[in-house]
Length: 81
Image (cartoon, rainbow, N blue to C red; front, side, top):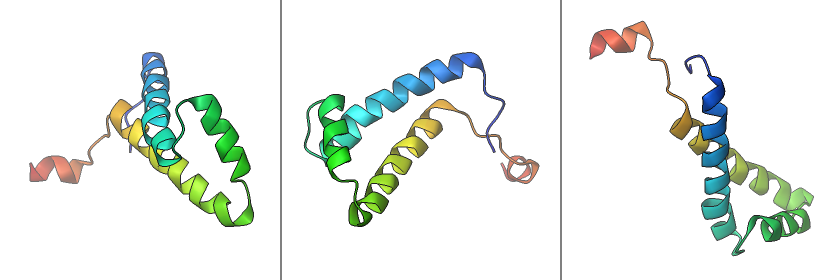
């Protein structure tokens, strides 16, 4: 569970997501910029490639969320530490 999200977190999230798209997804698809990535991903939109593309983007979203937002620990986890 994530703590309450503040407005300034959205700016940081956008920066993190943009950076990760540039580094992770562009690298995976051997492209140099987001515009080329968009063209490449559009060409991969088929039944066979759709799932893989969604999984790649989901991983990038998860990393961006984890970098940006602090997770709230449950009371059980707090008592263990």
